[in-house]
Image 1: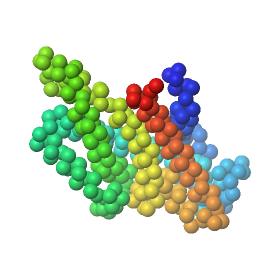
Image 2: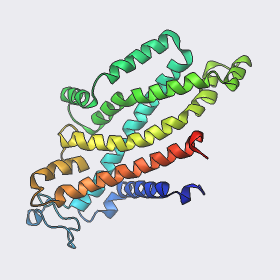
Image 3: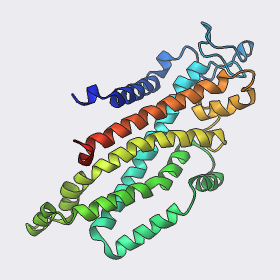
Image 4: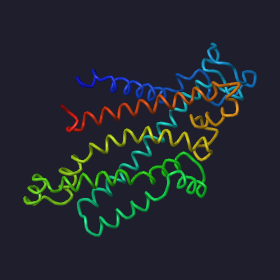
Length: 273
């Protein structure tokens, strides 16, 4: 922590992430207006005025309030999809790397098949069949991203299972479950942690992009991607409708990327001098 508090990347990244989390948690108290409340008298109201600090959209909804509430959607999608993908991928990677043989071949071939499908095409196909929705979007992202966690964990397991302490535990009669959980999994979590942090930033971008295309969350729910879609027709005469949500996405993704870079530099002993 002493090193972290002197690292600019950590301070900036953690500060941004904490700010976004605080906005999501305390949104009802922080938002000056109801995010779905329309006021046609304030239609496309300019920003930097007391009633509408960041302006209003095409039907008079306060942009600042919608950005604050939209942080909830971005964090839920980013964190939940990464958590599901990481858990599934870690379990598959552990099984494939530790037991090897036919199980490894089958699981890795499934991973290769998964990687053959472009994510956008897969998302469009699946959501067109099952319909859009928050949790459907999360499951589609998790289903498409478990492969990267599985391949990384498998690679870690293949090297760790040959170390002396794993061989010693096996010779002393330790069972497979104990060896995998206590000796292999804990030593393979470092790259998973870094990848998950960077994955949250990536999934926030993906959620915004899919919602912009109409394949994400319900349009009635405040989300940053939906706000970008709403403002694209007014970019010339009301730049603030899409600019401020875009800045919110940019800053949030930057925060998670900085935090992920710091974790990578801190947890990888090869990068330490």
